[in-house]
Amino acid sequence: MFEGGKVLAIVTARSGSKGIKDKNIVDLGGQPLLSWTIEAAKKCAFIDDIAISSDSKKIISIAEKAGATIKINRP
Image 1: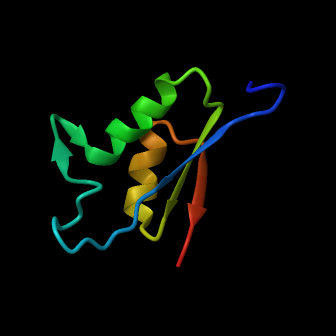
Image 2: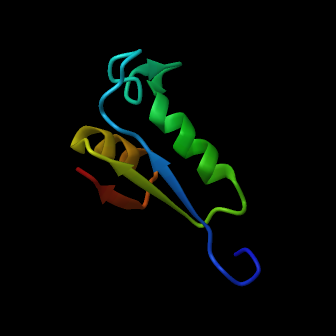
């Protein structure tokens, strides 16, 4: 889409958090924090695909339900 190419948004979300436990999946305004990020990326006209990179199967599952199209499992 961008000058003949495609743009991939990569959302990184690890499971461990020192400040707020499970902050990426905590409910914020009726949906997980991670979902807000993915929704914003989906609304961007320049982004063709959204990838989620995480060490948590639960986070990846939530991201896929929110519209992430590519999953990257990391250690």
